[in-house]
Image (cartoon, rainbow, N blue to C red):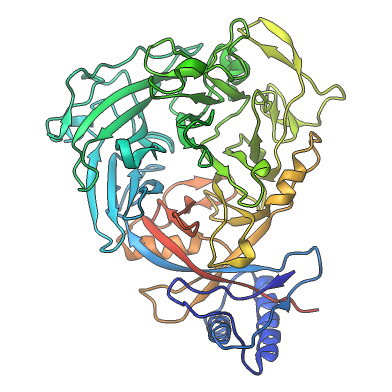
Length: 593
């Protein structure tokens, strides 16, 4: 494998070299190997590593530096990414919170660059939707969803206070936003709370609610505790940071419990006006906790007559694709005629794929060289055994709650080997079947074991320029442990072969970071957890460890996700310390022979 140090975001020079580089490469390789065997970094060793990386960075700016073979063919060398604290989120949690989530300083859940590149929209699960100005790095509360318990926000029934999944879950721009000012949000409500489920614009005078009506929840079998709500917003003036416009409820789905709600939203970025996918939204809907139940609701992720445990595909704008779709049952969206189950008796036409536990992150992987390699990818949180990345196909069944990862999930929620005849009944109701289907299995999975993690975070196919070693790689995180891994996208495509044992290998990313409160020396870390812990305390966190816990992570969660900007460059954001960090460079670290 060939590798070189990437340019930083502020370095416009081409790669170059300097005398004596080979000796320094040998030194850093020995130091790194020893540090990894120790499992942690001593300060003096960290300084040595940082100094060497600085030398490499300087060498990269000098002329004449050629590519160096850094690892045997076929074996990726370790990759280091350099992180820089980019912005601190406003604190919306409690510095002394005692629950799983209330002690998280800012529950940032996504970072979306506004079309045009001037600003970011950032949502906090606790309620605020911020606009962040890229040049000044100042936050403006654009919309506040939290009107609970006499708070000044929009929704009196916002369910944000317990569990890891709730509140303002997602925000996504309409592909035609630059012309129509539209974007979409998902939030979670508790219907048992007092008050109306319509928005309250008392403190949002720019929101015109004339004609706004809520929708009847799309039913889910079994008792329900929550509702996931999809809303379309139209801002008539996108040049300022104040919402001025209208809102329209598109869809409301009943959820069995407070976990695994309606989640991420994505549009196909390759689609253009006239294409079948133009302005068609894909929605990850968790199973609402039904699939691990010992009750009859356990089959909900498999049932084609309900929307939970699925990836949905709908057209939010009733004026789009009118000749190739039908209006949904609530009259607020359209269902494309080419969805796989529109003609299946008893099935919901909105379903694109099913049999998923919690596909809480969706990502369109776009191969700039080969359109045929474009894929929709879902990161789905597992139960007790496997975390998984799936390539989503039209009509596919991903097995849950009869499969977890590439194993059989038993009624006691333990896994075992797959049966010799690997088929699952197609359920169009509680007991009604329509033949059988072979499950589709993950292309990446990792276990709830030491060195693994508890819950997969988000992932992106890297297409930026700052870390050339990661181009064409799928970068993803584990929430609790703070691991950052990558897999080669070509190997992911190859693993999508119908064989449950074929998986793309994953490789750990090392993290270089300088604590802004602890001197100028950069240190190297295996995971984000110690980084978030230092920042948590520096920002005033008072718990003895990070908030939350996990089986693998133990006490304290890093709660780290990855995002990309319009140029394809990487950011890591974390809830426990409420920080967003930019990836400003990277290196392939040579190994000793």
